[in-house]
Image (tube, rainbow, N blue to C red; front, side, top):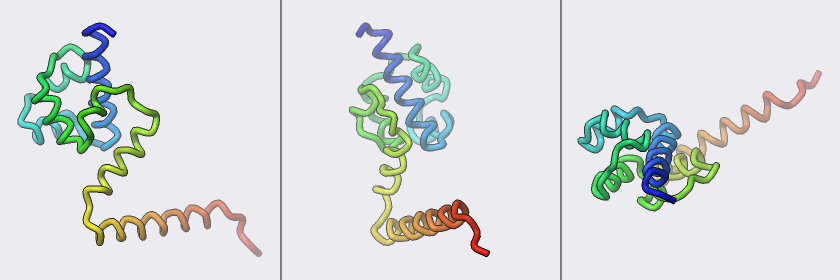
Length: 116
């Protein structure tokens, strides 16, 4: 893998994680105090970030630094959800679980044929 491929991998991983979490480049810019145009260049593989910059971005995205350097798995959305839930307190996690159970129950009711 050459340097250009590495920068593209880094950029794609940052973009995919950001989008999976519903964040904009401006959101990451605000969280990291980094210029949004530099972040956009990083995401396209045209900007060359320092390790310190990558650490700031990983922290803002609530992901491991290694996630930025490895090929992404298809379950990036699942990882984003887990990372967000892991940041919650025990009580908040229980509330999220209750909400998910309710949504699941509603979905099951919609897919079941109506009884006469």
